Length: 239
Length: 224
Image (cartoon, rainbow over all chains, first blue to last red; front, top):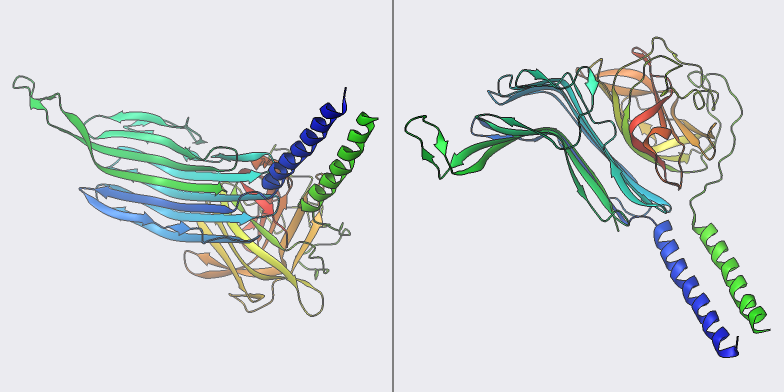
């Protein structure tokens, strides 16, 4: 081993150290931004509409601070579309020197969608996102349905989870996605997750032709004409 | 000789890096609180080593100490009384979110300088809210005392808010009720594990959840 080689060894060692330090401190510094939002119900249908309600949005968090927002609603009724009660939304988030995170939860009880097409004693959406030295991640632990039925068929008995993004057809209406999960972020420095526990997509066919024998529409493209969401929670962390 | 020279350069650098990294970690010095009788009745000591707590999520208390989600380790760690106190156990889904900042009053007592706590008891269909501004409970005008202590988990730390109690608004109906809130962060600085943190909610008229591991969510003590 000659002196020139060792010179490069030293340079590489120092370079590695600098890179390691920068990466380590970046991770230890955790995320610089957090976000959260939760609401119990949202209705946008030809039958009627209701904005995201009750809506809780996490205020801006900076430094090594934290914040919480919540909203309560006693009942909601959009005739023919959705009725529910005991509506609650909570979101909170924090930035620390070693970790940062956000967590959101929303719930709705006595849920009745489209005159009994979908019912549940209660729906709870719960998400959390966290970033720290071990990376960034999110999960929806604690998101469940209590006695959920779809088109008269029991989906859960008691309080239970349903597999993420479970889709069921609603003939003549459209379809529903149960435990709809929409992730964001790279999983290293950022992560986020939105959970919509019940997301009904109302659809109609456009551009098809009516079969004169059966009266059914042939061809055409399904077009979303409305949507109903019950139990939505979002959390995120980012650089 | 060159190898030794290279080693001499690298090792001091590594030592410096280690010291720097250690200085940048979030490891507050939390004192071990002595065992005390019920905080429901006892004034707090002044222990506000760290200052900010935030979190939220869900617990599913069952009232069964043998249940896997019952936190028998943390419940007695700060000298708190065994649940249910007051009886009965509050069971079923409980969701919550909170943010509290701790400080000290002129006498050195640990107080909450500002904070918001929302707790929803789903079986009871009740929503409690605590709001603290400038060190005063918005619903009764009293200061809100708190206490922090290390718990039975390695590196774990807990905070009790509302000693001996504080007043929450209760909906529906805009009622008022004496309450106490306790949470434990048992995964500080490491990968967050939803089910290692815990929460307890005590109410004068609707019972006590007992210390219960989270079903989902997170509790974070994020320093001063």
